[in-house]
Length: 274
Ligand SMILES: Nc1ncnc2c1ncn2[C@@H]1O[C@H](COP(=O)(O)OP(=O)(O)OP(=O)(O)O)[C@@H](O)[C@H]1O
Image (cartoon, rainbow, N blue to C red; front, side):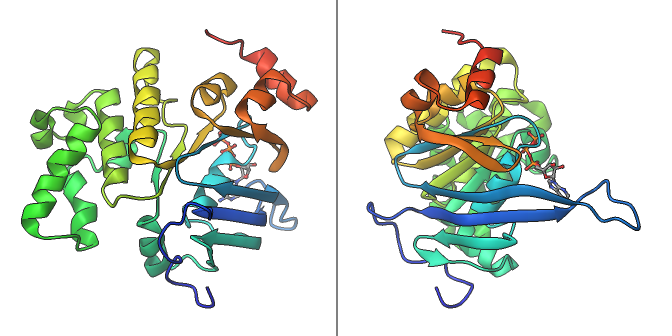
């Protein structure tokens, strides 16, 4: 795209929905002093492609650059250098208008639904809000879509009148996922979506994401520090360390025949549960 607004034309199966090419993100370090502004290379020469119907797992320890990469993938962070393409069109800024356009193509689910959802908005309003903001359909069709979204994530209609604080952590994350689906995106970026949840509900949310990917043909980026969680949902896996991709490939190859010592260390630190 020559300009910086519309994120390309509609999805084509042969084209990535989102693509990072040689992306670098450099921050001024939070620990710098007045006289020495250290730099952090949060994302260091990363190239990935995200397609409909495929799940890309991104795994790495804390500080490896996963969340920064997530922000680049949803248009919230502009790279210091390199290229981000949405539906084939390069995007070079992160103005509210650009983010609005990208939001229709790629949406995000964060780790903690308690902070991602407005505590004073009832579920009905939280799900309707993106439809109103983007002026989707008629008032009646928006009401129907809100119900449909609730059922899509396995919640009863009775939750529509609840406030987030009246729901369990798992229910709240389902609401956050429903909200992310509201505008029928091609891709969902899920940044540690189960890390804040009780162990007992983690598998349910993982299964829900896998079902949605299958039923809706969604593309998914699944980010976690836990390589065994990533194993369950991913088609391809990228292993990050200090902002760099140290290993990538089909999930089975990366997990069963890791080439890099760091991947082996991650696997050894998190023995398979199954
Ligand atoms: N806005 C920022 N300003 C300065 N440094 C930042 C900023 N955001 C991230 N960083 C630094 O960039 C590096 C990568 O951070 P990032 O949050 O992307 O890693 P992560 O793998 O997601 O870690 P975690 O799992 O702990 O969130 C870290 O060293 C972090 O301190």
